[in-house]
Amino acid sequence: MRTLYFDCFAGASGNMILGGLVALGLDEGVLRRQLRSVSPVEVELKFSCVDRSGISATHAHVSVPDEKKHRHLTEIEKIIDGADVSDVVKHRSKTIFQRLANAEAKVHGIEVERVHFHEVGAMDAIIDIVGSCIGFEMLDIERFVCSKIHVGSGFVDMAHGKFPVPPPAVVELLDGIPFYSTEIEGELATPTGVAIISTLCEATGSLAELTAEKIGYGAGTREYDKFPNVLRLIVGESKGATARPTTDRLTLLETNIDDLSPQILGFVMEQAFEMGALDCWFTPIQMKKNRPAVMLSVLCRSDERSELSEMIYRETSTLGIRVREVDRECLDREILSVATEFGPIDVKLGKLNGKVVNAMPEHDQVRRLALENGVAFRVVRDAALERVPNDQKRSAAGQ
Image 1 (cartoon, rainbow, N blue to C red):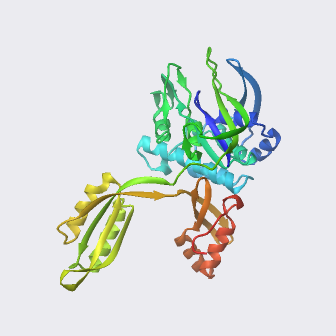
Image 2: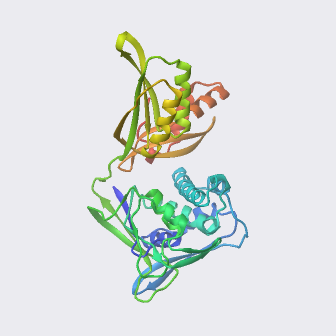
Image 3: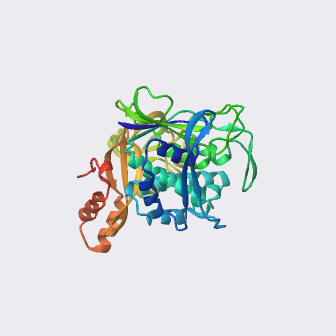
């Protein structure tokens, strides 16, 4: 598989990624032409060859007017949707910004819709993210892998005051990715850079086997004494991606019930999902004295076990619950929003080793649009599948 490896020994930022992609041989003219359709304001994008402690690297400088405004996620998504770029680029870019918004929302304890993007919401970050996604497509990257990320140390001044390195939002974005700090002071890993890497990379650590074709260095803006502030990007072929489907350790709650109204059982299922259960189902069974009964099963995370057990005891007639730890293996999933003649539809993509092996439009949206337009369900479903980019189209469940 054509693989891009992020070697983050000096952290990562949006402009370091963009500069590194140009260093790999990206056509600057093509990149600029596509980016012109992204920005609603005049943007100047310059690439220059610089020296960082003896390493020749490409520095990307994005210059935009000071708009003195912050943007919400919906505004940024509208800008991306209106750009003259491919659906794959739009999807990747919006997914990265959604991850940023979720991190900011968690840090500030607010809804995603209320998040004001500060540093990361500026037009230069939009250019960095969309430009990087354009570059990934131009280089035909199929798989993304990253090293441990060097985050730096010390403190950084932000819109809300002085914060330790890495800042709270960056820590949220680094969830699941190994990172480390040294005596090098400064914010080496920025929200934009970490959002791109953490959203796209399917694996971390050193590559077991990679045949390198090209190596490029993207320069950071700050210069250090005897420390190369650069991001190394390596493009090559990796032999059979080793990534396996994600495995989670979950809790399964089960109980047999033979004396409860179906109306109450329906209410129990509704409550379970509202409380965060990952799944809930009923299985017809036969109990003692030939009584037809139902086995209630609730799948949840371990920290939700106590609350869900209490609800089951409170709402049902059971006197006991069986509890088992189970492993759940699942494909990596993405949601791709596609435009059809009937209206926009979300398509759920299932990926194995970076390849799409399953694509299925959202049932409720297909049903609603089929009724609104007076056409068959399968017509709307097939229209959505036709809009899935060819490099992501592998199979459609149910066809």
